[in-house]
Length: 457
Image 1: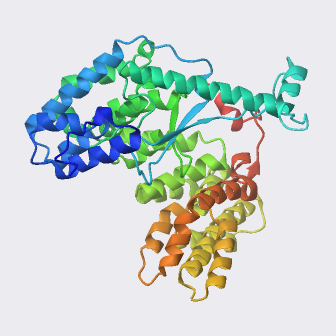
Image 2: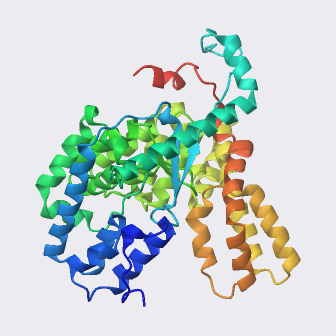
């Protein structure tokens, strides 16, 4: 019925209708001429349609022309960012995308005024305007109103961009067929890259999703150019696109998805080396495992453990503790057994504790899925929530695909998925306190090396 209708993507009532209508035509409209299909598919899913139709050379070239025309239109627009736009994150579904256009704006909370004891290595911070900032931090209503006003401002700005024809602003870009476009039209890709690297044009902000997709392709096809674009995007904090499940910036997935090359490995090593908290280290380990780069990760951990510097040994131990493998726990047990009481052995125990929590989550989730008694299963799920962290997204899906799982358990999981996401955040922040530690040691903003590294650039 839909394929025989006069439905047009640009006239859809909302993003949901536009997405699923486009999917139907992309999946089942292969019999339609390409020029007739265009009006039935949104620009976001046109690459997907080209892929489903067999990546025909002529259609790839037509898709390239459409992309370049839209890119030129965006480039020629006047673009002025709203004030304080760097506080905005666009949360979208990367692990489980249900709609390519589904996003939610999130304003970073004001951290308020921080009191740092002078007993720390570096007292940290200037007290200029201290009384005013302190009073402001206590006024929760004022902060909430400020964030609400900013959010409204951003929404209006996004609507204005849409009316001006910028269909890429605040959206992910579907990567399907983009590699073929770059191969077929290298001059277009060179223009996109050159302009993206030009600070004055601000194109990373205007169409960040498009440039992140371009970066992902270039890291495989042209690693040196992809590396330049990665660091350009990574350093731009305006309107960051983050995955709403893992809270990870989408740009961080790119160097871990990419094939190993000197430029790509250099990016990964730099990110790990410059990590200022255990949370950052934990996230890089998660990304390496999720993107199947465990060989690189194991080699890096071996280098750290074989180092003569205690700091690097401790970092290697923490990376082991953040992994989701039985072998990592066994290696930590052996390290602890061989070493006398010392600071480095305490780091290994810290890493082992974090590793064990993930194993407990394995156990309780399995018990929830398979226990024959409903009350016992419910109790197991509650215990699972007490120890789960983001590593669940590495192994949970496989466990859910096992046979003989009662259907009501799958329903319970789906209904409580938001609770799992919340629990991963609470456990990492309150139980592990990963954002307040580095290699298991408490850190304070403004302390000396290695935490002062961000001030030395």
